Length: 216
Image (cartoon, rainbow, N blue to C red; front, side):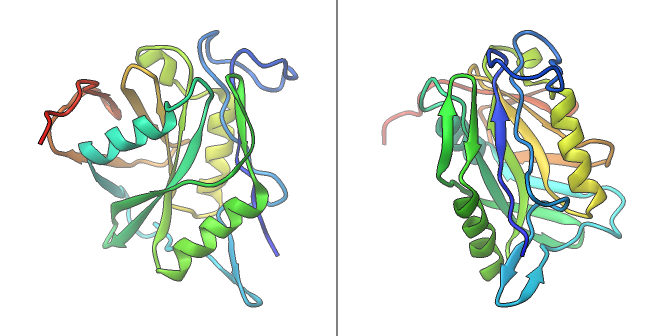
């Protein structure tokens, strides 16, 4: 039986040198423990994997700007770092992002956060029960601007394990001023964001508007 723990570590944490920093303002994200293949769901005695992206040269992830603003609000609701999964329905190499799935955190501070093992496992099983795919792990970094969303060496190493295992999840890093960066290790991908109040800064980097919505 395979489980996974999601772990993120902030740039202010006192951690070993293996957690290499991309910059002094950049936090270290999650790593998966206890299994070489993340997002493995177990139902009965059968190991169930999410829909594979294999066979599609450039998968496309489609989502709304409103959804991303909800993700930003969730991840920056407190001064501490946070993270969550996102699910998608896959159709012909296109991943239509459907919802976020939160889970209990075993540890959370301004320096990092760690997902509860049982809770992250239950989230995977729940997504699989609806035949939805875990299509991303979104998390927050401290700092402001596009630079604060750069993935660390540990982020990229963890993402490489996803891709080597054939999993379709991408990463997304949110800064507190609304910048968000989507990333993989080496796998090509495309992001299609529909809706207003979002600006494309560069490839895979966007800026969400922090203005409050008009009252109904």
